[in-house]
Length: 175
Image (tube, rainbow, N blue to C red; front, side, top):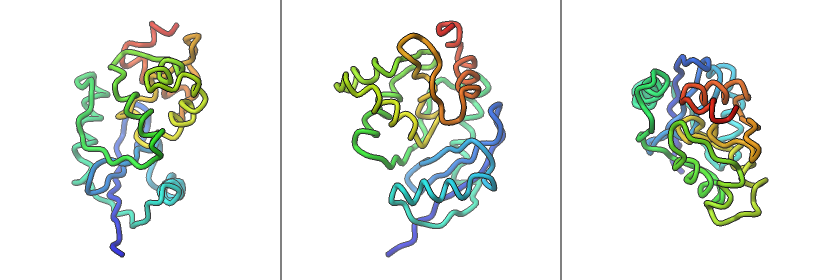
């Protein structure tokens, strides 16, 4: 059995330090916090998804991701085109693909996402898949809000969700 390598590096952002993880196929995780603080959590998440391998610090592999995130935070990028390497259930992947279609500065409710993927009664499951999104920001789960327009749930914390929506100019649409 071949050892899989996960290439990791950090970057500073307006949200604090982000740890970025990529495989040979693309970015597979973004974590809020430093590598030192999230290594145990990262290893547990990778293991839970059936991904076993070695973490290798590697700036070169994640440079395109860091560049596009920097452009996004500077208001110069409105969508991402870096390769991604998603691991999750078929349902989660379907939800994450729907999230990728939500445009910059737009929001959708969990109910709207459920309807979009043809599972109108799966609102809670949409929330669960949203919560398990391994690549926040690039897969814009921050753009999903409550049916009443309230900001609910965000793995990085509601303050980060608010910052991202404010950056995109969507915050006025929620208030």
